[in-house]
Image (tube, rainbow, N blue to C red; front, side, top):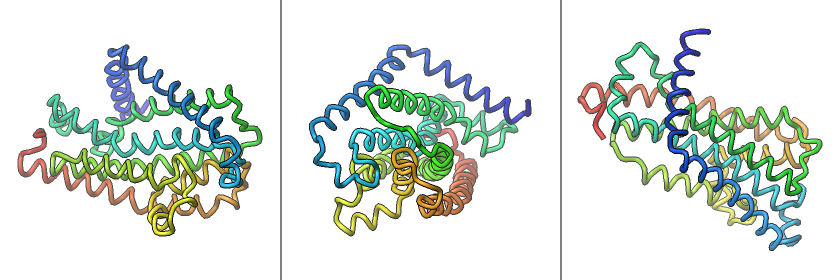
Length: 270
């Protein structure tokens, strides 16, 4: 096993023990997944067939539509806040400066600090999908390979935005209000809970500036409409462009933020 793999494993083991040491919080987190799934299940029953015409390209089932929305939205949330939260925790516990003094590459520090958040989010997504199947969501014939590619590109693009947010926090020390505002705006206009076609044209234009909009459309088409590669090709292309632009920008920004914090001696300040 390579040194990089061993270091990443060390991050995962550390955060796993930290998370599971608070057993009540861990259990209530899973309970929250169950409650949220049932809330939208009964909401879908309440809405009935009235939403079907608006969801025709996704099979017409609102519960399946929103279940994929909140599942993929979980990756967006952890991408947006996971790195910043890990950074703040390292600052408050005094471990950030020690980490930066080790031979561990900055990129691995970034990835390793949020690795557990992604593992836990993936577990939550599996719980959502399992509940969906038990409650009647039909995923037979889904284009699973396309869905996996969409997920990969989505995670990369979401994570890049999160690294940019962490870079801001490294410099200004407080970025929570900005990330919270951006996250709520993405939930509002990105299509997590309803199709963007019901919004005014100007909001739809803003929605198309966010990677989550393309990710949700492609994922829903792949899982619910058995879409072909050709049918989701434009969404995949958009996600790829987001990744190619955001990855280098985010890594450069984080490296700059670290160097600036080292120079002015505020690396461990919060």
